[in-house]
Structure formats: C-alpha cells, structure tokens
Image (cartoon, rainbow, N blue to C red; front, side, top):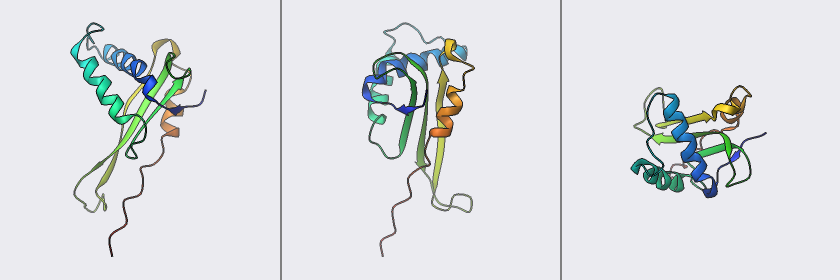
Length: 125
C-alpha cells in the first residue's frame, strides 16, 4: 500500500493512532473522551489538507476506514544562519504504525514519500 495524503475524514483515525503511539511510549492516553482528544481533533483539522507547510500521509483504507500508519512533516521558520541560510527547518513527527501492521515497511514508505518543504518566497526586488 502506498501512502496518501490525509483528509479530514481521517482525523478520528489519526487521533486513534496518536493514542496508540502514546500508549507504546508508556503514556496512558486516557479514555475516549479525554480532553486532549478534542484538542487533537482541532489540531489535525487545522493541519490536514491544503497547508503548504504541513504534510500528513497515511497508509490504510479509504478515508474514514481504519488506518495502518501515519506520519507528518512540517516546516518551522527561524532566524537565518550559516546552517539554515533561509531559516527554514523541517521536522518529522507522529510516525506511527498500528501494532498489528508493524514490520511491513509502512513507516519507511511514509518517510520516503514525505515531500521536501516548499521553496521560500522570492525576495521582493
């Protein structure tokens, strides 16, 4: 299965996978109505879709069906310097594969498919 961009219908599954990741890290994600889940819903909805500085990929069923894996990449902006001449830095986060689907290369396919960040805007001349 090839990764595809996440869509808003995937948000419940993205939250489920986030809870699975927390649990695997030894953090109790709490009940289904835990406050962080509603915050996560809003967080994902603000980032999944058309934002050019955030990419979220998933492996699994059609939107709204169970996902096997997910991963995100985004760009942050900092002061320029010798190592980051335009100030942009990219981050990978939330790379998680559901326990029954581990060992099949889903995480690697997601990381490989995450595109590079967009080019910085052209300087005004």
